[in-house]
Length: 118
Image 1: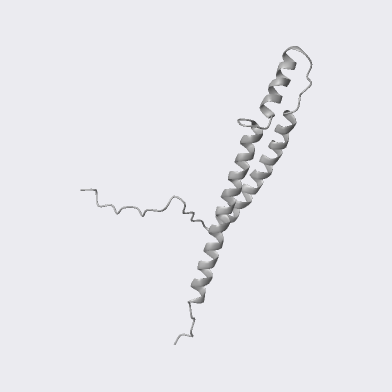
Image 2: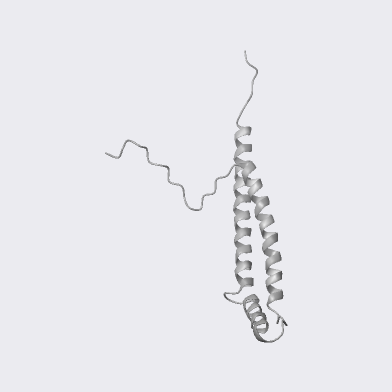
């Protein structure tokens, strides 16, 4: 016996259901995060240039900062840029879900006839 619980409905992995007010807030917050990521990319690109900190340990630190700020595979710039694209994809999914919700809501409203009671 399985305990008498009904099986949960199967939802495709690509499905994205959302409440309109929460979707709008999530979209706004993702946009804010994209702005932060953009600033971080610009800062990382600055680090990609040679950082003249002098000789010895300071020089090694400058070289380290330049190496990990450079564009290319495994760099901070590459990782942040990829993250920014993923954020944009999430925003697109949210927008698509909102459009679908609005279309279904309008279709449902079109099918309702309100006639005076009696």
